Structure formats: C-alpha cells, structure tokens
Length: 160
Image (tube, rainbow, N blue to C red; front, side, top):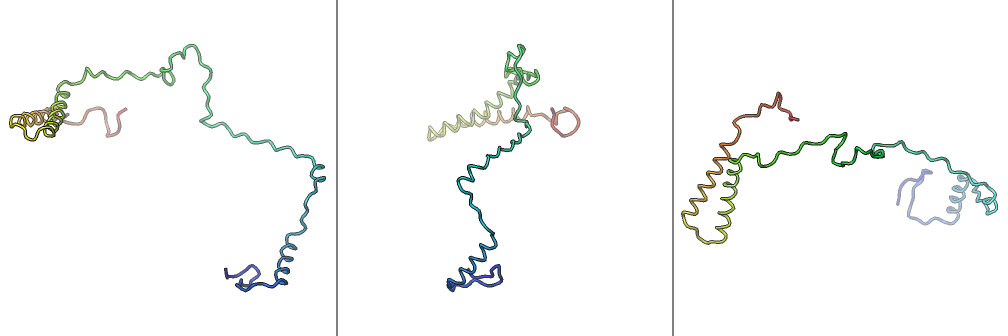
C-alpha cells in the first residue's frame, strides 16, 4: 500500500533494513512511555474497589402493574373504567329485500358456474332463468341503494 505516512515520507514496496525497523520501533515505544505491569503481590495488596451504584431507570409506561383486584372486579369483560360496549344488532333486523338481492345475484352466478363446469351444454330455459335471476338481483340491489348521502351531521369527517 503506497501512500504518505505520518512522518511525511512515503511507503514503498522495498524491504526495510534491520536498522531502520529498530529505529522506528524505538521511536514508537519512546512515545508510549514506560509500561508498568503489576506483579501478583501488587494485585493482591490493592483493595478491590466497590462497584459504583447503578442508576435505575425511571419507570416507563410499560412498567405499569394493576393494583390488587376488588370484589367488584369479578367480571373480566367489564372493560376499561367500567365501560361495556353495547351488544351488536342481531341479524334478524336486517332488510329481507337486501338479503334476497344478494342471494339472487351471488347464487345465480355460482349455480351457473357449477352447471357450466358439470355439463357441456345447458338448455336454453336454464340459461334464461339464471340470467333473469342475476338481473333481478342486481336490479333489487340497485333499487335498495340510498339515493343521497346520509344526514348524520355537518362536515365530511368520520362520524363517531
């Protein structure tokens, strides 16, 4: 690796003679100063330093532990701060016309696909019945769509 060195010279690929290597080594060790390696007796004689006290980090938000439960806390589904979400609406209150539209649309597509896979040719009356059922289901779904936006309040934001 050729390039400048700290002393301003350049490295070269030429081998150094022993006198130059010894001179550089003496220069490096002189800059380091005297190195003192303690003996076993010195190591035993020095008292062990106590470890400095460790700093305990402040508790964070994930270090929270709930307090002991009371007799009122028997039901684990009581929620946070006693809030219990309302029960969802049952499916029995759904619009039967809307359900019929979905069944007619998706059902006619599935039945038609299954019949086409199973049979090579279908009678014309089956194809016409499936097409009428599909168009009737799509028409019913379109008829039941709301005509405009809901009047839930001002603004275009989310309704809570």
